[in-house]
Image 1 (cartoon, rainbow, N blue to C red):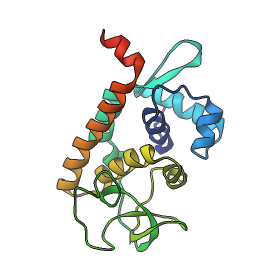
Image 2: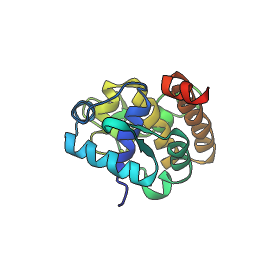
Image 3: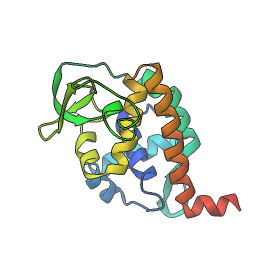
Image 4: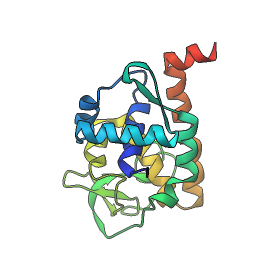
Length: 185
């Protein structure tokens, strides 16, 4: 079973909103995907060890594995190559949390091409076609996707900072998860 980019989108959405338990239909709606697409994504993520299945169809991301994959695999599996300058949704070092920590000249920060975008810059293909809409509707998801894009497209300095921030974001989310707190006791 081969991972697909939408699998990471599904995992990041759920990681951004723990301890919420999502139905496949609600998760699909939030990501502009079908329930069957989200179900297939979860099955692939579980098979790859990026998620763990529990009782009664519940599942959750395995944050250490998700972090390891994001840090060391994503840029090789789904590389991002900057394209032409267009209007779009800021990502990578053009979006928070990196935008406030790195300085980029106007028009240099990457964007996902999108008609309602607020910035202009070199385009990068999002992990999945619906990622820009999902990110616009969910700031927490946007932060995680921007960090992953910085890992995919950034230079060494941006990748190093993105790695630190992604680890901090996932640890912060993990600390808020009551199930994780139970497991630590």
